[in-house]
Length: 138
Image (cartoon, helix red, strand yellow):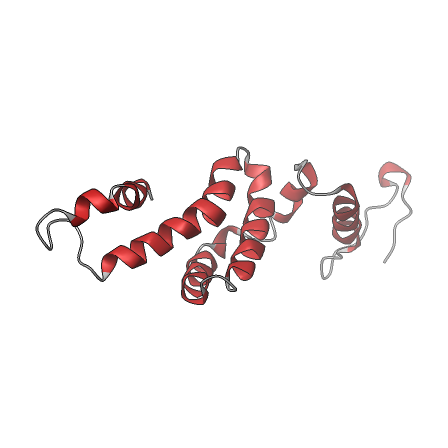
C-alpha cells in the first residue's frame, strides 16, 4: 500500500526515467486507481480499527463502502470484494458475541444481537433446574 502511494505521488518523476525502470505504461493507471481506492475507502477502515471487538463492525462498514465504490470503479470494487471474502474465515459463531462489546455497534443492534443470542437453543440441551432462579424447561 505504501509503495503504491509513493509511486502515485512520484508519477511525474518516474515518467522521466527510462521505460520499464520502475513501472510500465500499463501499470501507472492501475496503480493510480488502486491508490484512489486505498485513500478513499480501505485506508480509513484499516487505520481506525484499534480493538478486536471492533473488527467485525469495521469489516462490515468496509464491505458497504466497497459496494458503493462500484459506482466509481467496478473492477477494483469486485477485486476488493473477492479479497474481503477470502478473509471472512474469522467470522465464526464464537466471534459474534464480540460485537456486544464494541462501542461502534449501535445500542439497538447490540440489544437485538443479545436477544438473538439468548434465544439460541442448542440441540439436545436443557436449561438447568433452579439456575439463577430459572425454572427448568425440557
